Length: 137
Image (cartoon, rainbow, N blue to C red; front, side):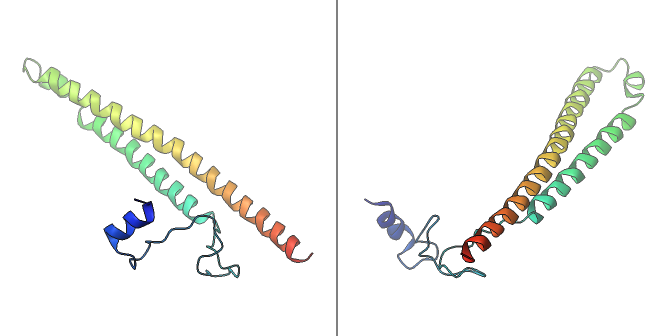
């Protein structure tokens, strides 16, 4: 059974999105698109927004690490002799490692997302100039 037939069987032939095209010009025209195909405009905004979220997560993870250290100061000494003390320290160490990993990954992602946004934005400008150059010929 062909994929389109299977899709139609599962979702009905008239369901939205049952027809799929890729890099085609036979789709409905979009905003600013007179060729009849899908708009493929890329902007920097979503990437910058995602970078901001990564930065916020980085900051909150760093704060949580500081709070964890502050909250656990003196616990080992105050809980000396209890059998749960080593387990408590193991859990604290494990959470410190996890929070540090989240913080570090968010820091890495922030830079990568900003870079991707900048590259996409610059590529969009180059593409617009190329299309304008083709249209004037």
